[in-house]
Amino acid sequence: DKNIFDESDNAYAIKTAFLMPISIAGEVIGAFSLIHHSNISLKGEEKESLKKFANHISVVIKNSKIYEDSEKARIKQLEEFNLNLTMINKSLQKFVPKDFIQFLNKVHITEVSLGVSVQQDMSILFSDIRSFTTISETMSPKDNFGFLNSYLKVTGPVIRKNKGFID
Image (tube, rainbow, N blue to C red):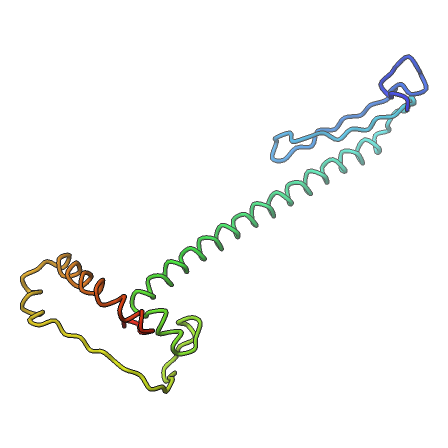
């Protein structure tokens, strides 16, 4: 367990060091070093081989960075796609209640196609608000929605309590 940097013991002293920068697009990102404990001198072709090795390392690092950036971009696209899909699903549920999809023994609206049906005995409640057309003509769209929502706040819980749903 000798300290190789302890120059008091010549057997472990660094006598030759070769340092080659590793760069990508002109930016130094690291260094490749060759350290030896004896006096050696590198010949021209050995130096060239080490330079090629350092260049190879930089290409490998660059390619791995490109792959990593590409994967991050793909993950971000998938996350955005999933978020959009979730928002679309929530919007669709406003027009096609989840209860209706479940009633058809389906999990998602994409499983419903023309002609899909379920035959069961059921009760259907049609509700009409007296003079609604006349009343609604005097209200703004916002007031109309407020009026209908206040009506559904009263009727909705009773319907759901009796295993019904509003379409």
